[in-house]
Image (cartoon, rainbow, N blue to C red; front, top):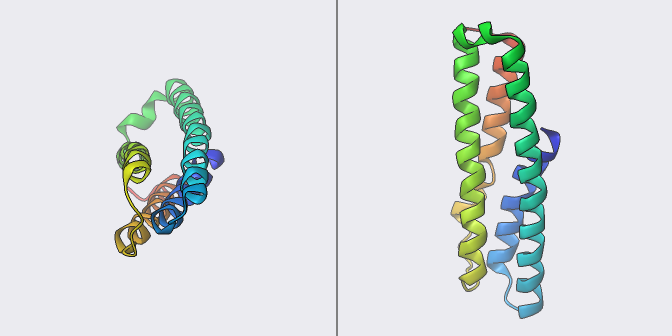
Length: 127
């Protein structure tokens, strides 16, 4: 899980730097870094899913609890965010440099919201 989130925190920051790069050496370097980081964080995401499913199998009663259902919804949205990161890699590979990184800077903050929500639900179990 830590590997996955480390990638989710860092990859969008690479997108910002990549979108501002203008020389071919930097562009190629960012392409390589993004691909490799995405591969590592995908392994982390897969292992998180496997171990999470194993824990769920061991305690299936969690599915009936509202806080856990909300946590699963946040995790599903996080997997969508992960997939969207993959799409950004393809977009930036083919796009020219841009000075407007406003959207990417907002996109960079989304994993923080997921992490805080998931930890809050897992620790406090408010519902």
